[in-house]
Length: 466
Ligand SMILES: Cc1ncc(C[n+]2csc(CCOP(=O)(O)O)c2C)c(N)n1
Image (cartoon, rainbow, N blue to C red; front, side, top):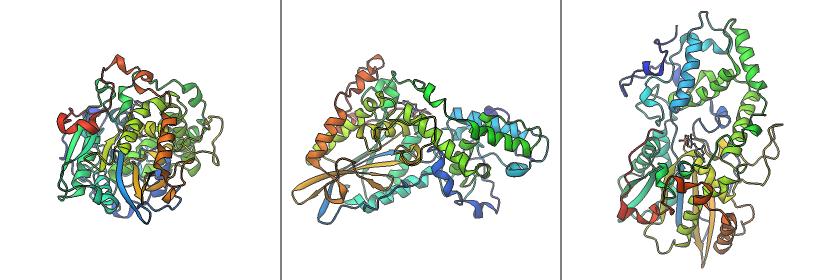
């Protein structure tokens, strides 16, 4: 009936590359057909562009010239983390042990191979070689190389082929791998060097992953708010599947885990039949629940996050201010989703001052959408350009220019440089990362210096499977 006997994670072969893709002819027809579902998957599924695009062109406006670009990117499409992988495997085993033929939307389980086939894949990018089939369009590897080609379309003139240019990566292996694939995507005409910056707590402020240097951060601080969101949609799913398959006894938490299964299977296989279990309304509930938790764990709902994000925003502002004297014009760094969320909170791009509520599902008044901001492969660009004698700053998030709400009077809805610095000073007022995060309890490194001292320090941190 269903694949090989896999009861424990340890029973998944640990032989990377040795598990050949199983290609059903149907794969060809199914891959890439579930794009509509991706925005509802809490940023765990494949990359997609920011859905609300005002249509402002990404290139520098007429008569203007880019002077600096900064890119803060998330690693690409990946397999589940070890924790999440364990939950998915447990659920898969519950289903696998069902003695009867499956009916309804679980019918696919009658002839199904689980998408996690090798425990070494957990935590890692999906690649051409570890994908479940040959035609998966959603690998983190292909995403990063395609992103690099797009980067060249807009910014190739900012890369000085004669000089070595650093690309920075947090020291999680998948983040490092993404940066490596990005460099490969740039091709042979540039002289790039990958600098791996430690994301251990001991790195303190000299990190691209402030969240990992933030012992004061408490994931559950606002769980009393987020736990109040309805779970009826999960009960509905379990009830429906149990009704179609008598004796199955799936729980609400099984139903919850199916959404992650759907997301990660898309990353690894290019399609996922379990995605078809959900009704649209259920996807909306799942998506909003994840916006809500993200808002209170890593977003504007947690006051300390503005300080966490200030570590990177401070550095970004300094790079902008020094653009005419720095050796590089392009600053490229890769990290984790939560670090990018924290950074965006401090910038204030999606912070409309309204708190998200667990009592209802908002539609008209919600600026904070986790998956829109940090899908796998997320990319936040800061552009600085000159037009005549004046300079301007603006942001591009996941292929859409997102003007600063209170500062967009410049060409291309940019913020005039001086006004930008005043805006940034106000956002950063009173924000002290090192203090708010109690970083001194894990490190004595008080400054972010890697953008400036990489040539002398050579960042080569040990890679972590986290
Ligand atoms: C402020 C803060 N500090 C630490 C954490 C924990 N955390 C950060 S990245 C990550 C893995 C998934 O990210 P990705 O898939 O982008 O690698 C986890 C579990 C947090 N959520 N917020």
